[in-house]
Amino acid sequence: MRNFLFTSLFVAMAIILVSGCNSSPGSGNNAAGDRETLFQVSTINALMAGVYDGTVSGGQLKTHGDFGIGTFTTLDGEMLELDGVIYQIKSDGVAYTAIDSQTVPFAAVTFFDSDRQEKIASGLDLVGLQAALDKSLTSFNLFYAFKIDGQFSYMKTRSVPAQSKPYPVLTEVTKKQAVFEFSNIRGTIVGFRCPQFVNGVNVPGYHLHFLTSDHRAGGHVLDLKTTDVTARVDDTPNFLMSLPDISSDFYKIDLSGDQQNNIQKAEK
Ligand SMILES: [Zn+2]
Image (tube, rainbow, N blue to C red):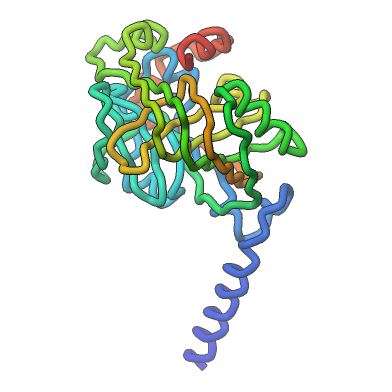
């Protein structure tokens, strides 16, 4: 009887896993939800306001996704997760492999399962790439994860240095950001397109980070030029947000204002 029960459970789990391949919008209520969920730590407006103490470890993040972007505690560099490995691109431009105990004050991750792929025209800059990606989407009211691989004739990225308390707001830090330029570089862009209705919670529109194919450099994407690039998209209908512990500065700041103009400044 016991064995039968275990076998039944196992078969049931296998069926759930198989049904997990379906990821069309609206499938969020099935058991595949975990793989189709954008998991987010804190909010972009809290990060804008200088809440840089990490609250979730890299090890915890990996249980919510193998793919994503964010930053590290004290704002020590750009975070990028690809194929379950978390990289820390510091302000020296080097991509370090992060250890699981490192914490993040802001991040968004998911399990990346490609739903569609599209060859991207050559010669597009960042604005052109985003317009091309927009054309491939049926709605702007869904979360999308993008994995964009290939050869870029140009890539411009940035990273930010670790901060000490009292933390300055993000627009003050990004005034002194380190900028890196690459030519004829292979690599992968990892990022998301969020709906406008996340304003205040995450970055509406595109937020993209880059890692070179040798995994040694990268950063937050400021501009680029495509050469031979393929974009894969993962429709992500579920959203889960984890707010910091009650002791966090998160609960001492005013989050009622609209930071959209400052986000535009900080992301460029
Ligand atoms: Zn970024």
